[in-house]
Length: 269
Image 1 (tube, helix red, strand yellow):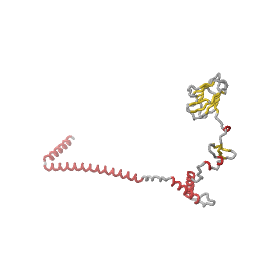
Image 2 (spheres, helix red, strand yellow):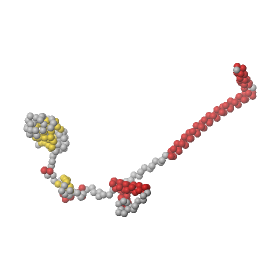
Image 3 (cartoon, one colour):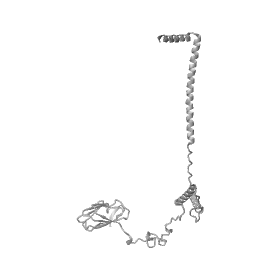
Image 4 (cartoon, one colour):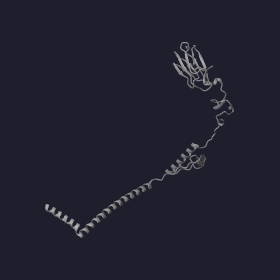
């Protein structure tokens, strides 16, 4: 084995000396080096070509995918109110004049499923348009409605319903027709609410009533000792009353006060 290695070593040294000293050997070495460089450049160029080819294939696939995507639908046409009204009128006219289920003797629809679906779709669209903006009286004046007694209309009157005639009538407000809200207080404190008119206190102990800070001008509130023991259990009314921010106290059995709101202040009347 050692002899074989020595042989290879001698051959390599001889080859090296031949390429470095012999003119022919030098030329052979130069050719080999040139071929090596050329092969290296060729492999590099092939690698670049393969890379470019891969990029082209990727672009081609992306174009094919984009081509297969469905086009973006066009934006719906926006019509003016006049155009929509005209379309509705045309549809209603067509619906009433053309063949439809409302005719006494309509043509029999073919048993084909597609024809039946088209018929149902047409009816649904026509009914939907009629419901949205379809025909009708279009009356916008109350006095011309059939259930209004027009002969009762006059300035300063209020509208009320007459169950006998089944009509709405305009009438004067009579005192006996006015019904006020009444509130019973059974707790130690109470704040006057927006719909309170008469407040009756029925509590076995002192009571504090708080008035609203502000109210509609002319609003009236009545506070009454219904329990009949305000001498023992006084009723304190808190609020700005007759320009007095301290309010007042009801301390007389069965006593009561009536207040009206005007110019930012509750006033005893």
